[in-house]
Image (tube, rainbow, N blue to C red; front, side, top):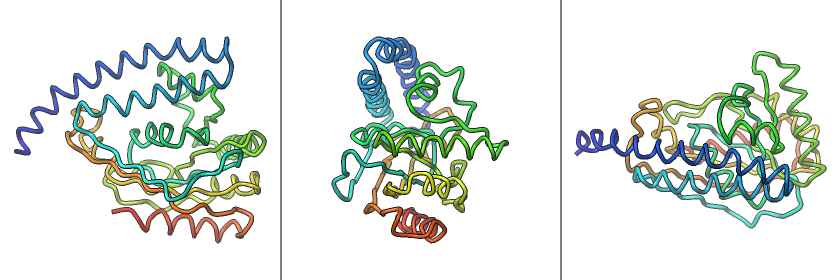
Length: 246
Protein backbone atom coordinates (compact mmCIF):
# COMPACT_ATOMS: atom_id res chain seq x y z
CA UNK A 1 0.00 0.00 0.00
CA UNK A 2 2.84 2.41 0.85
CA UNK A 3 4.43 1.71 -2.53
CA UNK A 4 1.16 2.44 -4.35
CA UNK A 5 0.71 5.71 -2.44
CA UNK A 6 4.28 6.69 -3.24
CA UNK A 7 3.69 6.13 -6.96
CA UNK A 8 0.40 8.04 -6.82
CA UNK A 9 2.11 10.89 -5.00
CA UNK A 10 4.09 11.70 -8.17
CA UNK A 11 0.93 12.26 -10.18
CA UNK A 12 -0.93 14.20 -7.51
CA UNK A 13 2.15 16.29 -6.72
CA UNK A 14 2.26 17.39 -10.35
CA UNK A 15 -1.42 18.32 -10.19
CA UNK A 16 -0.80 20.21 -6.96
CA UNK A 17 2.15 22.17 -8.32
CA UNK A 18 0.22 23.14 -11.45
CA UNK A 19 -2.54 24.57 -9.25
CA UNK A 20 0.03 26.15 -6.93
CA UNK A 21 1.74 27.87 -9.86
CA UNK A 22 -1.54 29.21 -11.22
CA UNK A 23 -2.49 30.66 -7.84
CA UNK A 24 0.96 32.22 -7.36
CA UNK A 25 0.80 33.93 -10.74
CA UNK A 26 -2.84 34.96 -10.36
CA UNK A 27 -2.54 36.56 -6.94
CA UNK A 28 0.62 38.54 -7.63
CA UNK A 29 -1.19 41.21 -9.70
CA UNK A 30 -4.31 40.89 -7.55
CA UNK A 31 -2.52 41.82 -4.35
CA UNK A 32 -0.59 44.64 -6.06
CA UNK A 33 -3.86 46.20 -7.21
CA UNK A 34 -5.44 45.62 -3.81
CA UNK A 35 -2.62 47.37 -1.95
CA UNK A 36 -1.94 50.24 -4.34
CA UNK A 37 -5.55 51.03 -5.22
CA UNK A 38 -7.64 49.97 -2.23
CA UNK A 39 -5.14 49.91 0.65
CA UNK A 40 -4.16 47.64 3.52
CA UNK A 41 -7.52 46.00 4.23
CA UNK A 42 -8.03 44.85 0.64
CA UNK A 43 -4.43 43.66 0.40
CA UNK A 44 -4.77 41.65 3.60
CA UNK A 45 -7.97 40.07 2.29
CA UNK A 46 -6.17 38.99 -0.89
CA UNK A 47 -3.34 37.45 1.14
CA UNK A 48 -5.83 35.62 3.36
CA UNK A 49 -7.68 34.20 0.37
CA UNK A 50 -4.42 33.17 -1.30
CA UNK A 51 -3.36 31.19 1.76
CA UNK A 52 -6.82 29.71 2.20
CA UNK A 53 -6.60 28.44 -1.38
CA UNK A 54 -3.19 26.90 -0.69
CA UNK A 55 -4.73 24.92 2.14
CA UNK A 56 -7.59 23.91 -0.15
CA UNK A 57 -5.39 22.62 -2.97
CA UNK A 58 -3.26 20.61 -0.53
CA UNK A 59 -6.38 18.48 -0.16
CA UNK A 60 -5.57 17.20 -3.66
CA UNK A 61 -2.83 15.21 -1.92
CA UNK A 62 -5.17 14.05 0.81
CA UNK A 63 -3.60 16.50 3.26
CA UNK A 64 -5.84 17.40 6.20
CA UNK A 65 -5.53 20.06 8.89
CA UNK A 66 -6.53 20.40 12.51
CA UNK A 67 -6.12 23.87 14.00
CA UNK A 68 -7.10 24.02 17.66
CA UNK A 69 -7.37 27.47 19.23
CA UNK A 70 -7.42 27.12 23.02
CA UNK A 71 -9.13 30.42 23.79
CA UNK A 72 -10.72 33.33 22.03
CA UNK A 73 -8.01 35.67 20.77
CA UNK A 74 -8.39 39.35 21.64
CA UNK A 75 -8.74 41.98 18.93
CA UNK A 76 -6.72 45.20 18.96
CA UNK A 77 -3.96 43.64 21.03
CA UNK A 78 -0.37 43.07 19.88
CA UNK A 79 0.44 39.36 19.85
CA UNK A 80 3.73 37.52 19.35
CA UNK A 81 2.99 34.13 17.80
CA UNK A 82 5.87 31.81 18.69
CA UNK A 83 5.92 28.40 17.02
CA UNK A 84 8.13 25.46 16.21
CA UNK A 85 8.95 25.18 12.52
CA UNK A 86 8.75 22.01 10.41
CA UNK A 87 8.16 23.06 6.80
CA UNK A 88 7.10 25.83 4.43
CA UNK A 89 3.57 24.50 4.85
CA UNK A 90 3.46 25.77 8.44
CA UNK A 91 2.81 29.24 7.10
CA UNK A 92 -0.49 29.11 5.12
CA UNK A 93 -2.48 27.64 8.05
CA UNK A 94 -1.03 30.22 10.45
CA UNK A 95 -2.08 33.03 8.11
CA UNK A 96 -5.53 31.60 7.38
CA UNK A 97 -6.62 30.35 10.80
CA UNK A 98 -5.13 33.34 12.66
CA UNK A 99 -6.23 35.90 10.08
CA UNK A 100 -8.29 37.86 12.61
CA UNK A 101 -5.09 38.93 14.39
CA UNK A 102 -3.28 40.03 11.21
CA UNK A 103 -0.12 37.85 11.39
CA UNK A 104 3.11 39.26 9.94
CA UNK A 105 6.33 37.29 9.59
CA UNK A 106 10.03 37.47 10.34
CA UNK A 107 11.48 35.87 7.21
CA UNK A 108 14.89 35.37 5.70
CA UNK A 109 15.79 38.01 3.13
CA UNK A 110 16.07 35.44 0.32
CA UNK A 111 12.28 35.14 0.27
CA UNK A 112 11.92 38.85 -0.51
CA UNK A 113 12.56 38.46 -4.22
CA UNK A 114 11.74 36.17 -7.10
CA UNK A 115 8.63 34.43 -5.73
CA UNK A 116 5.33 35.68 -7.19
CA UNK A 117 2.81 36.82 -4.57
CA UNK A 118 4.90 35.69 -1.59
CA UNK A 119 7.85 38.05 -2.07
CA UNK A 120 5.58 41.06 -2.63
CA UNK A 121 3.57 40.35 0.50
CA UNK A 122 6.68 39.94 2.63
CA UNK A 123 8.12 43.23 1.37
CA UNK A 124 5.00 45.38 1.54
CA UNK A 125 2.51 43.65 3.84
CA UNK A 126 4.08 44.54 7.19
CA UNK A 127 6.53 41.63 7.55
CA UNK A 128 10.31 42.05 7.82
CA UNK A 129 13.16 40.36 6.01
CA UNK A 130 16.31 39.55 7.93
CA UNK A 131 19.85 38.65 6.95
CA UNK A 132 20.75 35.69 9.16
CA UNK A 133 24.44 36.40 8.52
CA UNK A 134 24.10 39.97 9.85
CA UNK A 135 22.94 39.91 13.51
CA UNK A 136 22.73 43.70 13.77
CA UNK A 137 20.48 43.98 10.71
CA UNK A 138 18.32 41.10 11.94
CA UNK A 139 17.92 42.59 15.41
CA UNK A 140 17.06 46.00 13.95
CA UNK A 141 14.35 44.53 11.71
CA UNK A 142 12.89 42.44 14.53
CA UNK A 143 12.72 45.52 16.75
CA UNK A 144 11.02 47.34 13.87
CA UNK A 145 8.27 44.74 13.51
CA UNK A 146 7.78 44.62 17.29
CA UNK A 147 7.08 48.37 17.31
CA UNK A 148 4.83 47.93 14.27
CA UNK A 149 2.59 45.38 16.01
CA UNK A 150 2.46 47.53 19.15
CA UNK A 151 1.39 50.60 17.21
CA UNK A 152 -1.06 48.82 14.91
CA UNK A 153 -2.34 46.16 17.35
CA UNK A 154 -1.43 43.27 15.05
CA UNK A 155 0.61 40.09 15.42
CA UNK A 156 3.97 38.76 14.31
CA UNK A 157 5.01 35.14 13.85
CA UNK A 158 8.48 34.03 14.89
CA UNK A 159 10.05 30.59 14.56
CA UNK A 160 12.65 30.65 17.36
CA UNK A 161 14.38 27.50 16.12
CA UNK A 162 15.69 29.59 13.23
CA UNK A 163 15.49 26.79 10.65
CA UNK A 164 12.94 24.07 10.17
CA UNK A 165 13.18 20.65 11.75
CA UNK A 166 13.50 18.06 9.00
CA UNK A 167 12.27 15.14 11.12
CA UNK A 168 9.81 16.74 13.51
CA UNK A 169 12.23 16.81 16.44
CA UNK A 170 12.24 20.34 17.88
CA UNK A 171 15.50 22.26 17.92
CA UNK A 172 16.79 24.47 20.70
CA UNK A 173 15.25 27.94 20.60
CA UNK A 174 17.40 30.96 19.79
CA UNK A 175 16.76 33.58 22.44
CA UNK A 176 17.78 36.85 20.78
CA UNK A 177 14.82 37.24 18.43
CA UNK A 178 12.22 36.55 21.09
CA UNK A 179 13.88 38.82 23.65
CA UNK A 180 14.09 41.63 21.08
CA UNK A 181 10.35 41.27 20.47
CA UNK A 182 9.60 41.25 24.20
CA UNK A 183 11.69 44.36 24.83
CA UNK A 184 10.21 46.34 21.94
CA UNK A 185 6.60 45.22 22.40
CA UNK A 186 6.24 45.08 26.20
CA UNK A 187 2.47 45.55 25.96
CA UNK A 188 2.05 42.38 23.88
CA UNK A 189 1.00 38.82 24.63
CA UNK A 190 2.74 35.65 23.48
CA UNK A 191 0.68 32.99 21.74
CA UNK A 192 2.66 29.70 21.75
CA UNK A 193 1.76 27.29 18.92
CA UNK A 194 2.74 23.64 18.59
CA UNK A 195 2.90 22.18 15.07
CA UNK A 196 3.03 18.47 14.28
CA UNK A 197 3.53 16.48 11.08
CA UNK A 198 4.07 19.28 8.57
CA UNK A 199 7.66 18.05 8.16
CA UNK A 200 6.23 14.96 6.49
CA UNK A 201 5.15 17.04 3.50
CA UNK A 202 8.82 17.78 2.81
CA UNK A 203 10.44 14.52 3.82
CA UNK A 204 11.19 13.92 0.11
CA UNK A 205 12.31 17.50 -0.40
CA UNK A 206 9.95 19.41 -2.66
CA UNK A 207 8.93 16.44 -4.80
CA UNK A 208 6.99 14.24 -4.56
CA UNK A 209 4.80 15.44 -1.72
CA UNK A 210 3.63 12.47 0.39
CA UNK A 211 -0.07 11.76 0.46
CA UNK A 212 -2.56 11.69 3.33
CA UNK A 213 -0.55 13.69 5.86
CA UNK A 214 -2.51 15.15 8.77
CA UNK A 215 -1.10 18.40 10.08
CA UNK A 216 -2.04 19.54 13.57
CA UNK A 217 -1.72 23.01 15.03
CA UNK A 218 -2.49 23.73 18.67
CA UNK A 219 -2.38 27.11 20.35
CA UNK A 220 -1.73 27.50 24.06
CA UNK A 221 -3.09 30.10 26.48
CA UNK A 222 -1.83 33.63 25.96
CA UNK A 223 1.05 34.80 28.13
CA UNK A 224 1.41 38.47 29.06
CA UNK A 225 4.92 39.64 28.23
CA UNK A 226 5.12 42.16 31.08
CA UNK A 227 4.46 39.45 33.67
CA UNK A 228 7.88 37.83 33.14
CA UNK A 229 11.54 38.59 32.82
CA UNK A 230 12.59 38.05 29.18
CA UNK A 231 14.83 35.02 29.78
CA UNK A 232 12.25 33.32 31.98
CA UNK A 233 9.58 33.97 29.36
CA UNK A 234 11.70 32.40 26.61
CA UNK A 235 12.10 29.29 28.79
CA UNK A 236 8.35 29.14 29.45
CA UNK A 237 7.43 29.59 25.79
CA UNK A 238 9.90 26.92 24.66
CA UNK A 239 8.69 24.45 27.28
CA UNK A 240 5.04 25.13 26.42
CA UNK A 241 5.48 24.65 22.67
CA UNK A 242 7.57 21.51 22.99
CA UNK A 243 5.13 19.93 25.44
CA UNK A 244 2.73 19.20 22.57
CA UNK A 245 5.20 18.14 19.85
CA UNK A 246 5.48 14.50 18.95
